[in-house]
Length: 420
Image 1 (tube, rainbow, N blue to C red):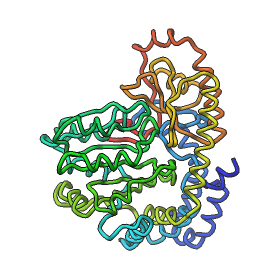
Image 2 (tube, one colour):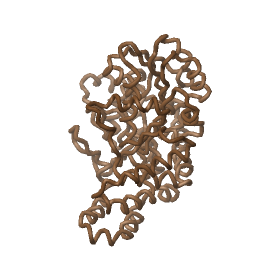
Image 3 (tube, rainbow, N blue to C red):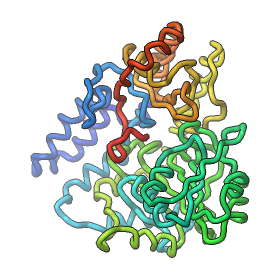
Image 4 (tube, one colour):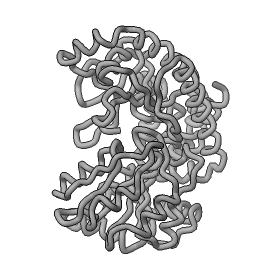
C-alpha cells in the first residue's frame, strides 16, 4: 500500500496541505470546513451517496463500481485547489487558459485545438450531436459506452452497432461497411466495459476509409492506464478526428469535474453552434482548472499510477484465472469483466450483501460484470467476496431473477441513469 498512498492523498498529507493554507483559513471561515470534510470523505464514498434514492451502504463497503481512482487527486492538485480557492470570488479565466496552454505544450497542438470543460461527458455529447442526425448515422462498437447511441437517439440519427472483434477491439472494417453515409464513428479506447484496445493502426485505416464528410470520435477517458499510442497526434495533423480526455480517472478528480476535447478548429466550432441560445460552453471552475494543470505538470504521476493499477489488476486477474473463472483478457484500463454465469445485476446485489459494490453489466454480455480495480486491500476483499458468491448455486439465483430489484451502486449520473 505504500506506493499507492504515495501516489494518492493520505489524510495526513491532506492536513499538511491545509496547514499550508492556514492564513487563508483564518481569513476565510469556509476554508475550515474542508478539514471536517476530509475526515468524512472516505465514509461518504463508501456509503455511495446518491440522489437516486435507495438505502445507503455500510461505511466499510468496498466501492469498486464506477471506475473511480481510490488514490484521489494528486497532492500537487490538492495544494493548487487550496491556493486557488482564496481567489474564488474572481472570474479568473487566466487559470483556465494556463490549463489549455499546458495541454497544447504537452501534445504539440496549435492554438484553437482545445476545449476545456467540466468533465468529458459534455464535449463528448457535443462532438456526437454536431456530426450526426437523421441523414448522418452513428456507427459504434457493441458492447461499448452508451453515450454514443443515446446521442443518436436524441438526434434521431440511425444507429449501426458493430460487434467487437475476437480480441474485443472495434472492428473498423465492419464499421465502414455498416453504412455508406455515416456522420460519425465512435470508438472508446480502451473500450468501456471490456478495457481492451483498438490498435492505432486500425484507427488510422478508419480515417483513410471512412465515409466522406464523416468524423471519427475517439473517447480516451482511460487511455492513461494503457501503454498503447494515443490518437492525439492525429488531431495535430488536422485529421477528421476528435479526441476526448478526462481528469476523472487516473488523475482521481471525478468529483472535481475536468475534461477536454481536442480537434481542429472547424470541428470544435461546430460545438458552439450546437449549444442553445448562443451561449458559450460550460466553463470549468478555477479550482478544478488549477488542479488539472498541477496534475498535468506532475511527470511522475501517470507512470506511477499506471503501474499501481496494472499490478493490482494483474494480481486479481491471475487469481480469477487460477480459480477457473472466465475473464475478458487484455484489459488496459482500471477495470475488467468477469463471467458470473448468472444475471449480472443479481450477482452485484449478492456482492453488496458481502459489502463489496461492483459495476454493472451490458445487454450484449448479460452474465459478465464490470469490476473497477481498487487498492490492493480492496481487491483482496473483492476476491474473498467473489468466491463466496460464486459458490452459491447459479440455478437458485436465476430462479429468483424475475423478482429481483437491483440495488443501486454508486455511479456517475447521466441524465438520471447509471452510465459510468
